[in-house]
Length: 88
Ligand SMILES: [Zn+2]
Image (cartoon, rainbow, N blue to C red):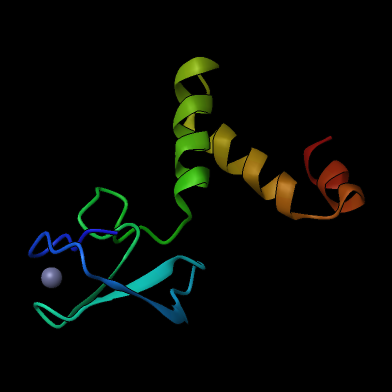
């Protein structure tokens, strides 16, 4: 992966992952560390990129409110019985 700071191509993959599980890299040229999302609009988000994109698609495609999308994600993370009692 190219360094987003100096564009060097000789970067090294590190064993350490980010809290969200993204691979981190080290650039020996500028001595900086970065991950797959560094330099993207998703860099400082607390959620994985695929979850963010799914929320945007649901919001735009199905014209859901943010509250509806939040409830859908809550239902996905809860056991089925608990989610049914909350929303039915
Ligand atoms: Zn660099």
